[in-house]
Structures are given as structure tokens and as C-alpha cells.
Amino acid sequence: MTGTARAQNIVFETGRWSTVVLGASIPISIALDNLLLAVLLFTWLIGGQVREKIRLAISNPVYRAAAMLFGVLLFGLLYGTASWGDARLHISKYMELVLIPVMGWALLNPRSRSIGLRVFAGALLTVLTLSYAFKTGLLPQNPWMHGSAAAPLVFKLRLTHNILMAFAAFVFSWFALSAASRRSKLLWGVAAALAIINVTLMIDGVTGYLILGALTLLLGWQYARLKGVAVTVVSAALGLAVLMIVPSAFQTRTQQVIDELRRENATRPATTSTGFRMEFYRNTLVLIGKNPIFGTGTGSFPTLYAEQVKGSGSVASRNPHNEFMLLTVQTGIFGLAAFLWLLWQQWRWAPLLPTPMERGLAQGLVVTMIIACMLNSALLDHTEGLLYAWLTALLYAGLPTEKKP
Image 1 (cartoon, one colour):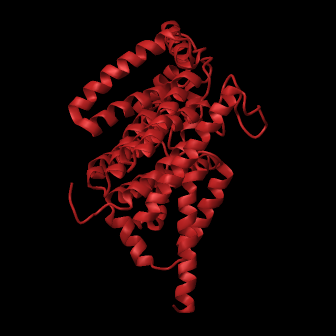
Image 2: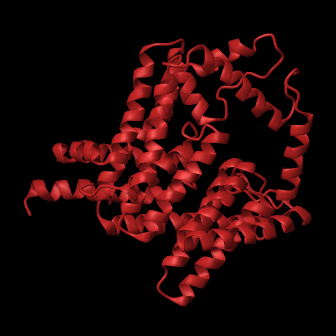
Image 3: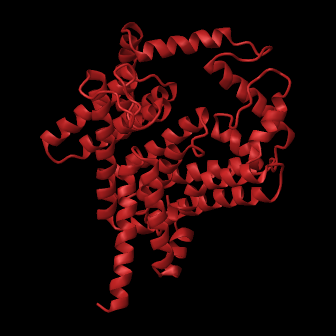
């Protein structure tokens, strides 16, 4: 091997391992995320093979769709009412979309993808274990983590923690289904059950509840089609009945949402968490109606929403807690269509992925993002957005583009 080839190999391996380790970092550390992203981007830029990298981004339909959505958002910088600060902040938040083919380049090898998934599962297991350690008092409250016995969060706040643990239950279930030994199946199955308990009984979060329910139904369909769905529905109904009876975070949060919806009145400013969301959605729909085709430019939402609620007594929000609405406000129906096209491409091509686990997790990722984006601006949030980009890059790196769905 020549000196140049050896140097290129070192650069590639550095980028590859940075991308793999990112799977462990995402549930744990934003600072480490940013460091690893800088390393993998730098190695991609200096690693040569430019034609091959461009060919990957163009030939892979999922990567191409992600780049198209980012292109629409980039075009949205050229018009509208956004201040430079808001425009720069928003486009930087969406940078994960254009990094999908960058990360995918490092994960073309099946072994890299397998290691990446195991590293990711290990990080989720770590978060789950620490959460139980907080709950049982084995781990005291400390300034480096959010957790306590009353609210056993770990590295992320409540909303993100519950999304991660809901998806973790799905990931652990697929590891159990794919395990070669009975012992491994049992251990991963126990981990999935503990993640479900963590989401429902220990941490309150409606988004996590809905994602967990949808992924449970999806898993039933993936495993045994209609029979699996029927069994899942019956099991979920029994579990829901128990959860509504047993005092828990689920019971408390569900009853709180019901009470807040009953008190919600569109004629006066909202005063509750659920009321705020309903108010955000109503006002955002008004903004969409004013510029439905092209929107008002990337990063324009904070200023426009503040003007919309000025003098009404309502709270000004920097995002509507709904990614579909946020994209439509900024880039109109073109941005919304680009995002829906990306999700559709992911769902459409998932059955052609190399392994059952990759196929199952790819579909689960789409379901997770749809629900998360209906209740939050998930692409705008660091952990949720980066998790989506990293998993998209990893799962679809092995897509055989010579075949058609």
C-alpha cells in the first residue's frame, strides 16, 4: 500500500468510526455529537473519491430525497421576512439532512452498520439502566444528569427521553427477534419490557406513549401480519386498562391532558400545556393560509408568530410544535411535499433493505418520525433530528438501488 493510499485509508477509518460512535453519542451528549459530526464531515471532505460520493447521494433515492428537502429549505433563505439570525439558526438545525449521504458513505459496509446498531442499542441500554438506578435510589441526583427518584430522566429532558425509550423498546424487540440463542432472545426481550415500563409507568410524555403504541402495532404486523396485529391490539387493550387503573405517570399525564382539553377555550389565551399546543396550531394554520404556496422563508416563523399574537395575550412561540406545520409556514406546500416525499421514499424502499432487522427498523423510524413531527418540531430539535438523520443514513446505506420497489 502506497503512502497516499495508507493516508486515505486512515482518513476513511477515522470518519467511519466517528459515524459509528455517533450512534452511542446521540442519546447521551450533544457536545460529543458536535465533535463527531465535525470529524466525520472533515474526513469526508478530504478523503477523495468525490465522484463516488456524489454518485451515492444521487443514486440512493432516500439520500436524494433528503437533499431535495434541504435544497427547498436553502432556497427559502432567498425570500421572506426572517431576520438573518433566525434564518441562520434554522438552516443550521436542518443541516442533518444534507449530512445523511455523508454519514451513509461511511456505513456502506454491512459490518459497520451492524456495529453501529449494536453501539446505538448499547447506548439506549445505558440510558435505561441509569433511569432505573435513579428510580431505585442506587444513583443519587447529580449536576451532570437530569434524573431523580421522582423523575428518573438521565441525559435528556422528559419529551426526548420518552421518545428515545419508546424507540428503544422497538429496537430491543428486533434484537430479540433476530438473536441466534435463546438466552439472547430472553435478555433483549427483558430489555424491551423494561423500556416499555420506563415509558409508561416512570416518565410522563404523550408523544412517547403514542410512539410506543404505534410501534407495538407495527411490530405485530411485521412479525405475523394480521394475526400479529390482532394479538397486539388485544394485548395493548389489556395493558391500557391496567395502566388507567394503576397509579402511574401514564395515568396522571393522560388524565391531565383530558382535563386540559375540556378546559380549552379558543376564545381566550391558553393557560395549560395542552391548551398552548392547540393555540399554536390554530395560529399557525392562519399563517399558512396567508402564504400557502411558497411560505414566508426559512426561519420566518418566530417573527411572524409574534406578530400574529401581538396584543392578544397569547404566548409567542418560536416553533408551532409541529414539524409539518413549521415547514409549510416557511416553505409552503413545496416544503411540506418534499418532507412527505422523503418519508414516503423511506417507507417505499424499506422492504428492499438487506436484513429483516434493517427493514423493520426503517419502517419503525418512519412511524416514529411521523408521530414525533405531528406533536413537535422534531427535525428542529437536536437529538430527534440527528437521530433521524443518523438512522436514515445507516439503514439505507445498504439499499440495492438497482432493484425497484
